[in-house]
Image (cartoon, rainbow, N blue to C red; front, side):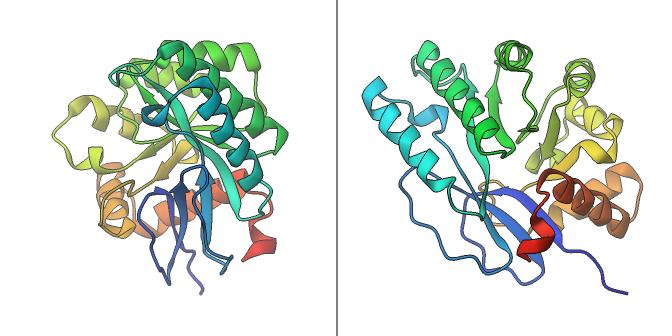
Length: 228
């Protein structure tokens, strides 16, 4: 019986994988490889890289140009970060622009959110988007996770699953499998390592977890079967 591939929904390093489908994050204007069947991409202006309005608009134009390629399947990472010393009003404007592009190009959006859940929630309420929003490197607690789940957010976990953080572990155990993704982000690890820890915490087999995340990926990327 054929087994499904691992899915790494968000990674920064280039990975020449044979048994994993990756979504590599690139920045506006970065080059990216031709499609090989496993190398998908996301593109967006990270809130850490917010600059002047003119430069941000140029970057947003490059995001839109990249979204014309079939294997650029996620918008982002984009979002809000109250830790970084970048103009928050401009962060909001740029994030909203990404959200509108996600709707226009029918791409899910991968969201960077640091201490700004209220603002992300408010924008989602305002827009009522059809496209999924995936909170990457998610580390929210149980109560906010319940609120976000009810609003239709999806959640991607990575290295936080290895930390002695009861808040994160409780939210991960609570959330149903059909809301979850796994990621390596900037780690040099293989995503299989994340899957092993996640399966252990969920009390299920790795194969069950692989199948669930594969189904989640197919659900958000409806043309996947025609591309690989």
